[in-house]
Image 1 (spheres, protein in one colour):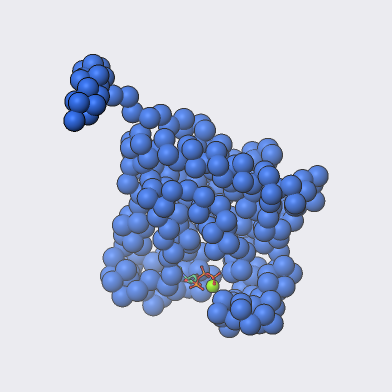
Image 2 (tube, rainbow, N blue to C red):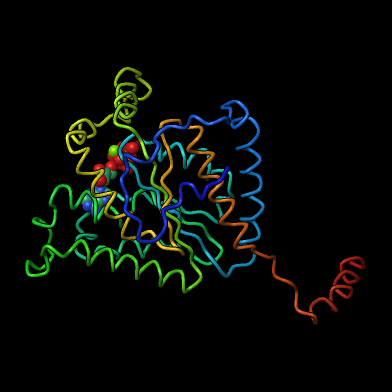
Length: 286
Ligand code: ATP
Ligand code: MG
């Protein structure tokens, strides 16, 4: 798969309508699920092992999408292939009192990976230029009034670019995935949450109400993606109407990223190597 077709170049103008939500290429669902995806997951696990052992760099995976686009399933089917010891998953919900009492990147910084780790963000700091913007939430926020002006979103884009570039300069790569779902497919999935009892727990009436803001969200996404896709921390717009395809596409992105990072197992220092024979002998003679 050529994942570059989904990568958003720096300073691109984005019209989400020009991006496919569905996949209609030659890949076959059965083959992807039974062969191609498992192969990718194995390769990812091997690279993660080396990344963890190397213990110098880390990865942040930002997952953003409209409701019911499949973030949870993606995490379950793609990222559980990795060793849990080196992975963290953080869902970012409506900020709690303590989070509201800080700047918006505070809770994000607390969830950053250690060296060797992969941190998955289920929603992220991008909610602060998204739901916050669509619902005009800054009105009720404790932010000083004089700081809320028409330029605030552009300022936040700049802050986010600087934050991600800082992480990059410190050995942490940020990759951003937008699961691009159609409004019709969302309806189908919300219907399923209503009609299938085992999916009831996923149903939230607010998901239905949010559909009224669909176009506003699409516009906010277009603006944030256009302003924050950079060479080092790009956005990928992934067609998400077919879950199996979206999962495979994300595994391809992760695999390419990890291969490019080329993590290597640390070598023993020469002196330690010389001593190995000695330690072997001691164990043998126990
Ligand atoms: P699901 O698909 O299972 O519903 P979800 O990610 O939508 O998963 P929820 O608990 O339903 O999880 O929703 C989290 C909610 O928190 C979202 O509506 C999101 O917009 C909101 N949220 C996240 N960050 C912020 C923020 N900074 N300000 C306001 N709301 C936020
Ligand atoms: Mg939700």
